[in-house]
Amino acid sequence: MNNKPFFKILSLLLLIVVMAGCIPMSTASIDRNAAVVAEKVLKESEKPKKEKKESKKSNYKLADEQVLNLSIRSYSDLEPNNAYGEYYDILTLVLPGLTRQDTESSEFLPVLAKSWEVSDDRLTWTFTIRDDVPWVTYNTATQAVEQVTGLDGEPAYVTAQDIQTRIMQILDPFAYAYNSYLLYSIAGAEDYYTLANTADHVQIEVPSSTELVIHLTKPDASFLSLTELSMFSAVPSWLNVSDTTADTYFYGPYVATTLMTVEYLSVSIIRNPFWVDTKGLATPILDEININLQYDLDVLSAFRNGEIDAVSLNESEYQEALADAELAQYLVDAPGGYGIYALFNNTNLEPINDVEIRRAMASIIDKTDLLESVEGYSGEVLQGFIPDALREESFEGISYNPEVDVTLDTQPSAAFDFLYNSYNVNREVVERLSIVWQEKFGWTFYPFGDQYSYLSDDLQNIYTQFPGMYILSFSMEANGQENLWNYLQDNSSFVEILKGNWNNSEFNSLFDQAQMELNDEKRAKLYGRMEEILVNEDVMIIPLFWAQQHWLIRSDVGAEIRPVFQQLENWARIIP
Image (cartoon, helix red, strand yellow):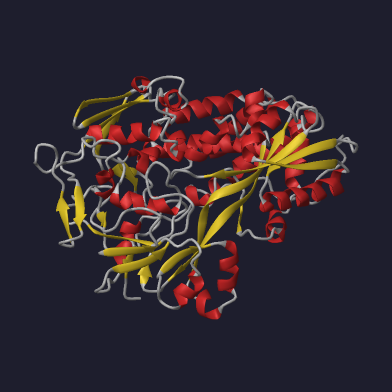
């Protein structure tokens, strides 16, 4: 007997009951929601699954010379305290963290950590640190990589104390490290950085040179996505914090031949002959990587002249390269690291206290047309909260429907506040969405550009009298979709949760379950259900676009472009 139809109907009934309890709705609203959910449930088995990626690296036919010339441009610096963006790509080669994400399985694999255990409450992570990763330095006189000796005159190896020292340096309130906030999940870390408490309240223990115990403020089953960042790298703990010798010590698969500083026009890194292969970071292919750090470099001319082999382009450079037949053949597009979303504010007020009004507002947005009309931005239409590049299955969001029912009580006289953080792209999106909604519903929108640092406070304390919308960009700061979901618990992002205007018990329960679930696939399913609630059922957020990144890459360079943090150890010079 085939039971599939029965289970589909049962699932449908359960979903309808759950939805009816989320937000007060009329009978007609429940009927309309039931129809929407029914269609989605019946289509669930038809969702296209992404094909498993095949490793490009294994298919490379390698060239004899393995030297790569890159251009990287950023306002940050090349120290773990403050580096972000493309500088991470270099830092994690000379000073890797505890883990590294596998490009094929998305699993986090051991690097400095040999293994780890997590407590049942997901609050304590215990890492066993490798004892065979030597500290090295580049001797400019002999032009050779040499092992570093410790205070006892013996070769020095990375220890748990070295990793603890790095973390504490970044949290030092007088170091003003940009990346300190990424460590706030560690118990006591934020209080120490904000001078609310002392260093000894940061809950990191080092029982031995190979044991690192980290206690968290709240459960986090996805903590490994942070531990691959350079905040969880090592620094020689036997040296004084003011000793600049530490800047010349490395231990990763590459070693810098010059100081790692943006004060130089370029930095070169070469393979470390003392590197021990780890599961997460094996011996790389390239022998040498030369990085041009000039922020004002004319990268298009440099690429034409053969001075650089790969570079990430800004939007104006991309448009110029696209129009140039010589350069266009080398363009590579890939998903970027951030998305743009429209969020509702004050859903306790009419007319957006009705989920059907919110659904109608989402339905009449032609996202493709909106994307094409925004200058200085290229990306892909976003259907769900999470881009499809980060998931196994594609997500089906609210479909575009220009004929949406406008016979609902939409209060033509309604006035909306429409806030955005002050970027040109966000301003254009606000202007165009205001026109779309005003033409359809007759509402008046009052746009206001605000600095991001003030946006949350203003939404909570000033813009509370009228229904409203605001535009936010959510950026990935670590690999994996967990980083984006954590934004929804951030006081500076999803203010409707903070203000208590939206409270979905199922959503909250699923989030709590996800924080406890160590299995990546099971956690992804929990997030998938949360996404259905957030985007399609309660319609609290309207995903708009996900940014694209554009690279110029020579045809004899084998490279796989990732949304964040390129893994240059997998790049190679190849025979096309």
